[in-house]
Image 1: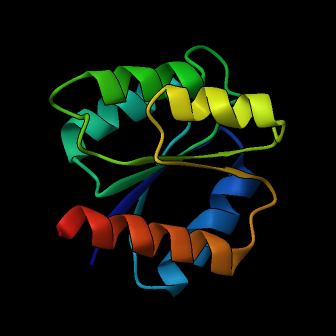
Image 2: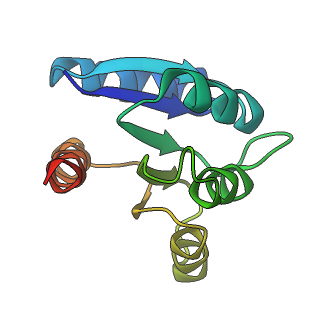
Image 3: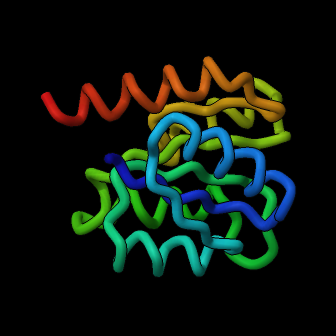
Length: 124
């Protein structure tokens, strides 16, 4: 069972994503800030990270850049999920090293399909 870390400061969003992921058989843990997310990723080594952008302190762009530029964590895929839905935000997120960028609210089938695709690609 793949382990996914949700990094999001909204309890509502965390609940929605956790419920969605657990329904599809994923093991889930949560971090509520960019700093906590980076720390948990280094300690837990999840199979994939769902990263929000707008958070106090270290935002999702900064956390993604830290993770993807660190040889210890660069192989862990990051998918950004954000209310910031502009094309420039998506491009910037991908430039920080994210594997994908989805605007909230996220369609469940789309999200699960992206996660499955990224995890399958990672195993090959």
